[in-house]
Image 1 (tube, helix red, strand yellow):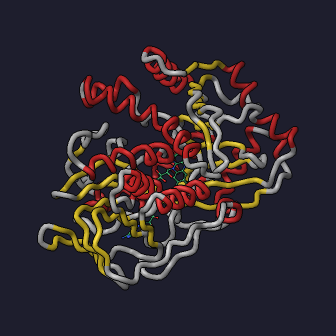
Image 2: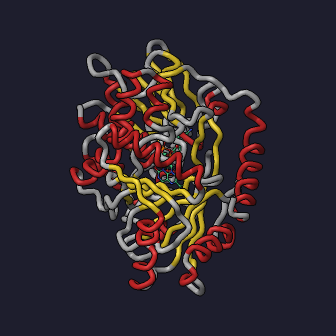
Length: 428
Ligand SMILES: Cc1cc2nc3c(=O)[nH]c(=O)nc-3n(C[C@H](O)[C@H](O)[C@H](O)COP(=O)(O)OP(=O)(O)OC[C@H]3O[C@@H](n4cnc5c(N)ncnc54)[C@H](O)[C@@H]3O)c2cc1C
């Protein structure tokens, strides 16, 4: 990670607000907290530390938002991958309830933060739709909706007829609508978070990869290409780009590419015929497809794609074909961008927080739903790093457990994606 890599050729890179200056670190520093990774996790933690007057310094190998944070679908989705009942069964009533409150509160937290700092990132809260196109998934989603409603959440279950109106297609037979969901411009948001963190007093350095991390007496020593950082505490927030900085950490996640294709702005009529009320939507299926229409009427269609970097819509032609199958009125519309980035999947599909040594915290593995989760997690990580009363966080803090046979996982994931695509094509 030495030479600076350009941003992926995304719609966002072409349309984001200008970046704030984050010059490479070229003098040695001594700080309270060093944060490795300048995505939402690292930047939000830095902002929340700075708000409390704690000196925080972010080291980002490329530029803030270069990773998943500047290239994702832009959906702010409440909750975790698992159902509320499952979370309580896995972690017990007390921690389970705190995890549920936290995870389903992440979107309001994020949209409040955006308003508080007036971050210009096209944020809206028009709801998240989680849809099913077969009976088994519809039954599972209805059960999830009931669990949410039982806990007093603003969730409704929609049937085929209601979904036809909301999505302009008859593909879906059931869905859960959570009114707390929404969307934003991911790269503008990442840049806005960096700006807010810096204004609050944090230091953010781009083009500054952490090359090594080791104990130095009671502190930590981080080597970067031009300077050394000494820190009382360290947060690793490298998610799908996790390397060998901390032993075995790379083997606790499977880094997976997700891809997005974007159209040119659609006419008002076509955009309205697809999603008149502009929620965000993800499908519950063998491979997840997710989409939204942005504020310029572009359709952004996301899903699993090639497990390598891509640079054009043709690299994810199946997403375009799938969109045209859902809405034949799209035939002939121009697709202007195709890009991807890497996210981190964990074996249990929960986000992971580790504290593998005194004064070292690690947070990774948002499993494809990290826009709001990583933002809200930043506030919790900041509390934990400050310590004392209030250091308790609403996620389990677990040991580092490498995935057995990790080297074979990417092959397994690719096979599952391909199998899923074949089954989806057959309409199973
Ligand atoms: C295509 C795609 C679509 C997605 N869609 C959605 C969505 O719609 N909704 C949702 O909630 N989530 C979505 N996600 C997931 C979401 O983007 C991530 O969970 C979230 O951005 C993770 O933020 P992060 O800060 O933990 O990691 P990242 O944003 O990936 O940041 C990690 C950073 O660490 C840096 N780094 C790595 N190693 C080092 C080092 N040694 N030294 C210094 N820096 C280092 C990298 O350069 C990178 O910038 C999507 C992800 C992808 C890839």
